[in-house]
Each structure stands twice: as C-alpha cells, then as structure tokens.
Length: 637
Image (cartoon, rainbow, N blue to C red; front, side, top):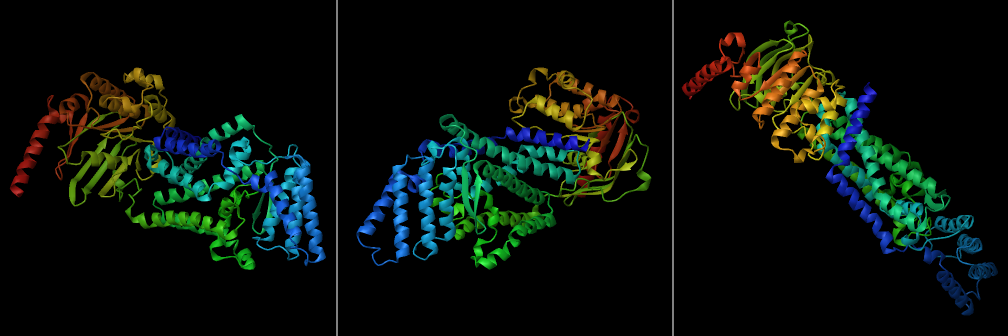
C-alpha cells in the first residue's frame, strides 16, 4: 500500500507540474534555443578538419614549404615524414569526398603528424593526446557503412545533433535545468500536496526527489524533441555507430553516438537527483542532511586527487567528473568549432573552469540553504507539548485538553476541555480575532511557528503525535481556496482526494452530491468564489476522513448551496465522522450543530443544544458571554 501511495503522490505532482506555466515557459524557451542552430546552420568545424578545401590548403602549404627550402637542412627522417604527409594529402584529394579512402588518407596524415610530434619536430600543439584523438576519429569514420562528416548543424541527422549538443552546450546550462525545475516543484502549486500527503517525512521527501528528478529529465526530453524531429525529418536519424572521440582523465576515449547519448542521459538523471536531494534537504529544514549532501558531492572529487597530483594539474581542475560524460570532443561529430574546445576537455584548464562554475553553483545552493535554515518555517506539524493520561477517553471520542493557546504574546484560549462523540457536528463560534482559525489549524497540526500550544489532543484513545497517521484522520477545509490549483480541473481535485485517501466514494457520486457535474472539466481559475468554496467542501467529503474541520465553509455560498453543504455534512456525521465548523452564521449553526464551542479567552466553553433551551441556543449564550467579556475589557482599560 505504501508503494502505491508514493507512486500516486508522484504521479499527481507530475500532472500538476505538467500544467505549471513556469515549467511550460522553461521547456518552450529551451526548445527554441535548441532549434535556432538548426535554422541558422551553425558551423561545426568539420569543414576545417575534413573539408576538401581545407585539405587542398594544407597540401598547398606543404608544397610551398618544400619549394622554399624550409626542409633542406632538416634530418632525413623528417623529410621522409613530410613526403609521406604529402602523399596522404594527394591520396585524399584523389578520392571522393565522404568515402572510406578519403577518411583513411586523412587518418594516415594525422598519424604522421602524431609521429612528427613524438620525434620532437612539431611545435604549437596542445598535447599528444589531442593529436591522437584527431587521428582516431577519421579512422573510426572511415569504418562506417556510410562515412561522412557534417560541417553545419543543419546537415546533421537527429541523433548526431543531440550528441553534438551534449558536447557543445556549456555544462553549466545543463545543470541549471534541474535547479530551476526543483525550485518550481517545491515552491509552485504542487507544494499544496506536501501538507496533505499521507506519508512519513522520509517517504514524502523521497517522493519530492523523484518528482523533481523525473520532471527535470522530462523538461530536457521535451525541449530536445523539436530539434531532433526537425533534424530527423530532413536528414534522417543517423548512424548509431557514429564515433565519438574525446580526452578524459588523461586518455583518449572512443565511443559510439548511441552509447554517449545513453551515458549523458544517465549522468543528467544523476545530477537531477543530486540537486533534488540537496534542495529537498534544505527545504525540509535539515541542516545536517544538507551538509551531508555537500560531503557526498566532494567524494567524487577526492577520488580524483591522486590522478591530479601525478599529472601536476592546476588546482582549478578539481572535480572534472561533473562534466566527464558531457565531453563529446571537438572531433566527435565532424567537429565542434574550436571555440567549444573548453567543453570537450581538449584544454584541461578550460574544461575544469566550466566544471568549477558548476561545483560552485552546487555549493552556493548548499550555503544558502544552511544560512537560511533558521528562517525556514517549522515543519513540525503536531504542536502538542505534553500528554495527560486521563485525557485518553473512549475510542469514539475526539478529546481536547487545551491549557493555553498563544499567538505571540496574545493568549487566545485558556482552559478549554471537551470530549466530542462520533457522529456529531459541532460549531466553533467567536468574534474575529479570538482564535477560531488558529484553533482549527492547531487541531489539524499546522499551527505555525508563532503559535504556542499547551495541552493534548487524543483520538481513538491515542495521542495525536504521529503526523502520518493523523493525516489519514483529519481533513481541514481552510477559509480561502488554498487547496485549489488554478489551472487544474474540478475533476482532478476530487480524483486527487479519492486516490490519496483511498475513498470508497466515486467521482460522479460527489460531483452529483455537490451540484458540480456541469463543472467537472472546468479549471478552478474559471470558477466563481461560491463554486470554489463548494469544491473545497466536496474535497473534504470525498476524503472520507473521520474528522472534518471546516473554517467558515458557508462563505460565498447562496441559499441553495448552503443547504447542499449542510445536508452533506449531516451525511458525514451520519456515517460516524466528527465534524467541526467555524462560522459567523450562528443561525445556520443552531439548526445544523449538536453542540458548539465558544472561544472567549479563559471563559471558553462548550454549549449543547439541550443546555440552550430554545432555537437561539447558541445566540443567547454568545450575546451574554461576549457582552460580559466586553464589559470586562472596558473596566480593564
């Protein structure tokens, strides 16, 4: 059951995120950015590396140097290499472009350059590894069924274009996506699920991580889909065995495009989950977990320290594993331009500098989270601070022993006790500012950081301290539509409650009960205030909870809908639920309720229908109680 609850929670949150305007805008902007190079025909550098004109220029330069006597005094060994290089260039020019022989000749030429470098005759080259990578790529291309390279993004097939983006797009850009999605998932409309989830804190945070990680990957997939489709329509999918050659950890690595894309997807998923874990730890107010995440992020870098010490690498080359799977080499796909060399690890210092930005960003998130820890709202839902064993009543009772309820320095309620039997409807009455909403929030377990509670709350002969268990029992309808997500439909909200609380009631049954059938597929943003309030109460009805708390549920309702809500609440009491209603409509409460709690500071009391004596059983006590309190207040002044 727990696994199903978690999956339901994840699915519902993903459905909300899918309609979040921020997520939609981010996805659309990324899709536009990825499509622009396809339309602008951005050069990849392949023409410089493998173009016939470039080969002709290299041959002309070599012939000119020989004619000018540059190599007259050179060793015989070098002259022999130069002659072989010229022969390779001639062989390439005699071959058809994009043929096996053409790329073989280029690979042989690059191999001679590597030999020349190793013998000490070639200067101005970054490293031997760059020459080795430059030789291996055309050799691998020549072994394809259809050897070819791509001198612009417009000519690239779909799969090749995706792999090109993996290497050409700065790594920090890929890292920003999970960060933005994480923020939207935690602070957007989906957070309204968090307080309502019937899960433990560990399970709830695990679901948050899954939601953020999955959403990040879906955003990237949807953003890359349009450019992939465009490239595929015009140029096909591409050869899955197309080679990717790059430098990683001091070695030349060769992979296929398919493998590289798979590794990129796995690595991006890991990054998304890492940022999600970090953000959720900070959001949940756990300083120790946030610090632990920072330490875990360092482990990968620490494992690389011996390598860097042996290679005498610069200090800012720390943690290159952050971008290792992105490295697609400037030669991988017919050549990303040399301007992108920093992203392909051909220049270790430059590549690591980009990595440093990513690492600094991760630590910045950690630091901000730890610094703001003391400012975060408390996530402890149950505020009762001590237990009275004698308050454990019958299993059917909802028992409250409230010594004091204080907001800031203002004590709202003192010395209130009651035992509410099952199957009854109770009212909660007081003038504005006397603590009705605060008490309901306290009963529900989310009083807020400024509220101090002294007392105990018991239900089913158990003290209400377990968040997970009590969320299954209590349902609070707030006095404003904070449960509702503007762009989601009426049916979604009711179905959400049905799934989360495993309600035996059906969607059609509740829609018909609250006269919402005609608004089933209407977004909340298009509902009137009265229908929004009606939907709030319908969600409580759908939840089938044992304790239903309603904060002024009749507000904005017309006479007909007040009757509908009243009858629905009688149905709830009829099945044995405890219903507590806060309202200023005393006449409505007198006809609906079995008892009423009047909040008047240290003179708070419970009044039953039998005690009142007539139809004005609440109004009479209310007038007497608050008239007395007003006179006391005036005397105190």
